[in-house]
Image 1 (cartoon, rainbow, N blue to C red):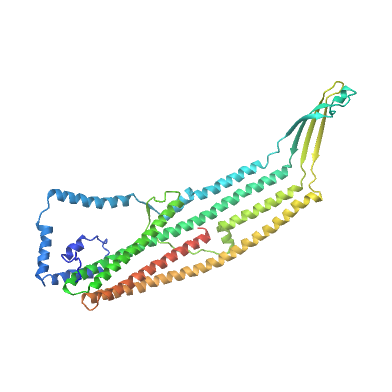
Image 2 (cartoon, rainbow, N blue to C red):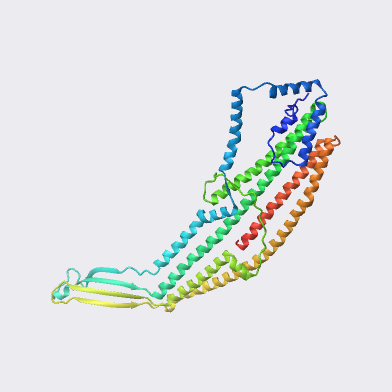
Length: 486
């Protein structure tokens, strides 16, 4: 013989009063089932003396026997502790809007800071490009005879030589190199904007995933409330052979299945929280919550011509900076044909007498236009020119591809909005009415619990599908905004 505990059998009114209130959002199904439990109890409690005795004992324990004052205080403190701590924890959690999170990422993300440092390094390297070569100083002998040689005259002893040499660069060449290196800083800044756009899109998707997970938890809470009430009704009916034991176990299984779905959504929330904290350069376990009133809106672009896209997209700006940098590099390479200079001064102090001090001044110039030396920079110039043409064609192809993709995303988003609207306005209300009719038939003993559970599952499944479609819509909106660099 099977036996089950029936905590709700004694007093349905007390059981319902002890439940956590659902903020006044009980559905018609819940109210109908609650009313049914109370009605069933009032009918069944007079059927057996056992039920009446059990109820009287229960009421005596609750109301007739007075509690000791100390126990009252302890019970009140116990309740206050468990009621206040969650409230305090909830108050400590900071509510961050999506815009606040995006601003925090822009200001504090470590990856974004690296691009500023790289840009500054290019600026410093550009200043270094205008530096001259260090002067060369040498000391040695000049026209000194080898040991053992016969010296005929004091003038044959040679001289002590002091040499000074300095390379004089071509200023046009230095300035061209400096401009080219400085242009690399603009490329790094544009790269930062591209990376920021990727991070913003990732943050939006995490935020929307969290938002939909909260919606799913709310739906699951309501579903749990309905199933708990049905379980209690089955527990009331079972001792009087008004229900089957298998139906009670089925409600327990459905409740645990719903709890698993809740755990899954809580895991999604935890993952999104940790990822957003990391992007904001905060500790991964820093607790905060989101603005659940947010409803992502699809704002269609006013114009999708290639000129507007080129002005809006940061990756196109980065490509433009790369092309400009390549042009400056070509200009700097052409300056390799300019000559460079060298100055040399020699001073000689003779070892012997009869010789005056002497000096030598020499100026030198390079000849880079010589055929055997000009081949190097001329070939590099041609190679860079081909590379610039390839980048320009790649830019045009990227704009054309983006334009077509955005038009396709617009049609897809509009279709998804229509599908979600139809599901919310037509399918869900129909399934809700079906569930209400099933509960009504269940109250009148015209339908078994498994049939009601089938209607309950269909209603919950459709609500979950709607939220899944909403998440897909929100993620599509995030991708659409990513392509427009909003």
